[in-house]
Image (cartoon, rainbow, N blue to C red; front, side, top):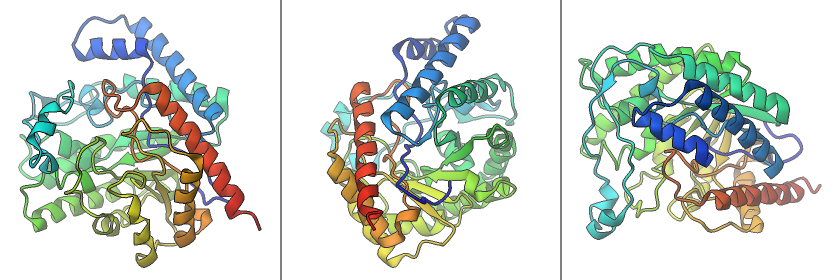
Length: 378
């Protein structure tokens, strides 16, 4: 995560559409159906190699493994760690409350969140080891400009998997962080950048923590950042990036916190780059925030310049315009072109058709190239 020197680099948030054969095996595992280990391992390794190569061919500079082996960006930890079980209750969307007919038609996610019901410890390191092994082989073959692996932040885990065991919320966060530190360290040691997913800092205000008084919500977010910083203090900030979002779904979103309320706390986190939504109709205008909120010298931004919930393929000129707006206020060196969120944050849910998702990423690359020509013209 270094400043641009010659052109605008491109990336995305992490998750990409899973290959059909891999998706079938992931779902069988989720249903506790028998899947031959050798079959799954071979399919996963091949799928990661394919998705990394496809990113490079499409024009993505900073690539991921597509979260190919994860059932969901937030829930994969339940298969790696002890302490989770049962089924968490529903999380009403504050923005959907006024539109019950729309809410009733909205697609239900088949992957359910558990609760935290006991001590947290490692029970299965094999999936992490496979992720690192498969991604290393794929990166060595494709030779991208850069590479990253996503990992759940303590605050994200606590948000999606409610605490039913620890005496305090802070104690729960500390327990998660103490265990996930091993995952963070392993990603860094393997030579990849670490993306810490922190949608809880924005999304949880209108989904999940909407009944909390402002001071309680603020303290939860502050605690999440404090503990994240404590557990990553030994990692160089330039090896880390963090992702914020307000929920990767096509809905009203009229109760989303404004970016200007989320950024000040997010900027206190150690990662040098912050990824956030900047293309969808609820947040595209917020590039203006950077005119009044000074970006620290050691920070980069990764604004979404294509939407992850619509099947419209953005015109490259529009993508370039979005990039150039941000570059105009923070400098061309500190803007990396990204996506609002993942294209399959839950493996079974594809709001965007897989083929269209790749076409959108192609438009991202074209737009970044156009913006680079304009920004480095002199």
